[in-house]
Image (cartoon, rainbow, N blue to C red; front, side):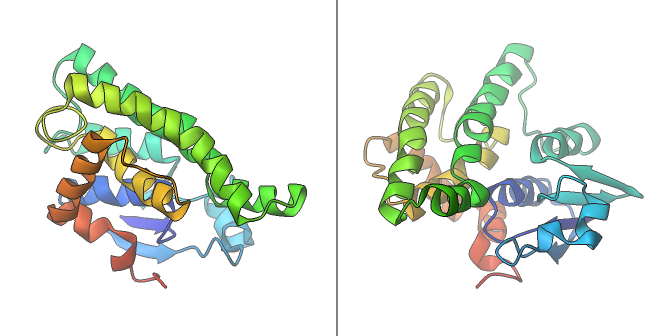
Length: 210
């Protein structure tokens, strides 16, 4: 498997976490988003949307991190990142979607670029924009973790929800969002900082990191 990604991309990061949790071997091909490499002819030929991640596997190219993570769970089911019970799986998918659909897309690199270039936003305005979506989203997730977590977002072992959460906490800190109101999420972040799979997937450990 070859993962085309960018060291600080939240979507590529969540994919690395899942790959590491499942103990799968993979190579990496850097796509420098700041330099616009995602719009190069070579990469668009691989992924017409011009976004990371893209995962090359067995002659196929998989795109969109939710689809890649679901594929990983189907093809490499152990260790499981979704619970056995159907209702529990729905809870985990909802937590993941809360981050992946309602928070992350509103504070990724291309949105920040649009805010700056189209609307003249300075860094303080970009930070405020990010906080507008992160804070209520994290508030809802904190409540869900209170109901379902036992050390991780759901239960006592990492799930897909944690793959989504950890990169978003990193982003929240980059945007100077206060996190003291979310002690359960911070506890999960601390647990991830001690977990070998999450450590290996961290942006600072990637070959293309600054």
